[in-house]
Amino acid sequence: MFSIRGLDVRAQAGNLIEVENLFVSYATEHGAAGVLDGVNLAVRPGEIMGLVGESGCGKTTLANSILGILPGNAACAGGTIRFRGENLLRLPARQVADEIRGRGITFIPQDPFGSFNPLFPIGTQVMEVMKWKSPQRTARERRGIGGGLGGLLRRYPRARRSADRGAVLAMLRSVQIPKPEQALRKLPHEFSGGQRQRLMIALALLPQPKLVIADEPTTALDVTIQAQILKLLKRLAKERGVAVLFTTHDLGTAYEICDRITVMYAGQDVETASVGDFFRRPHHPYTVRLLESLPRPGHELRGIGGEIPALVHPPPGCRFHPRCERASEPCRSERPPVTALGGGHQVRCYNPMGT
Image (spheres, rainbow, N blue to C red):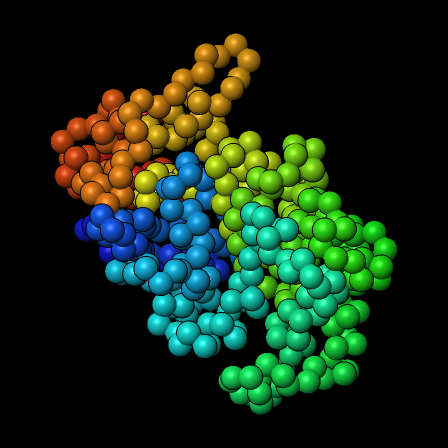
């Protein structure tokens, strides 16, 4: 059990990952920026959870916190990140790097071209990842590899390399890369943008992870290729029973791929619902206004008045209250607790709409 601003919340049994009351700040020349303010998130095994919100709302920081790759000017001021019951924030950094990041939890970046070294063939780079992160790599191998240059130069066991190469070729066929044997000999620039993203999906799935974090993976692609990549990622995730945390600012993309959605605003989670409830019955004023900003036939576009608050000196309470026409005095002083609306729908609002 954990406490959120006076509200006791019992963690749901069976969640793959649970982020509880997470605070993260960045040191800046103007002071500490509170990028995550008591954020809560849960992802179940095998589901695709969408994390949506405007640019700068904290989606990528939350993803990086789970991966343990926050920059040097970041500080975690409180909270827990439990993956399969273990608090990642309390594990030794080396254990996270060896057993969790790149194995139990993998990552699909927004820019696949920037993630590959342009000087080496794809096959060289993929097999280097498999040398360290293959599910066939034994605990004995991991114990036998020391730190420093000696560990980096240790040989790739021949039998495992052959098995790993077979797994790579099978995965390239699964992500619909034509002629996988030839593809491994190509340089990154010889692939199209969509093919490079398929390669990143393959890299993320090869270690047989339990969770894949996809950070706006279709932003750099045109619309027709986006649809293909979303369909592919959803199919492979469901077939393999892999959970996906899918960050995006595009609500249409979230509708296509997600099972549930969590909305963030200025570093705070404000509403969580199934994808159907999210689009049909939103309750937080920010979620409602966000959906009203989508173009629809016969409806006038509505923006959200005001500006996103600065995170160095954010407003107290609910950070949306300066832009909210329903704000009352409690909104300005105390962050709203979680209100359960049934069916897994939760909202943080003193004056929710439609209830």
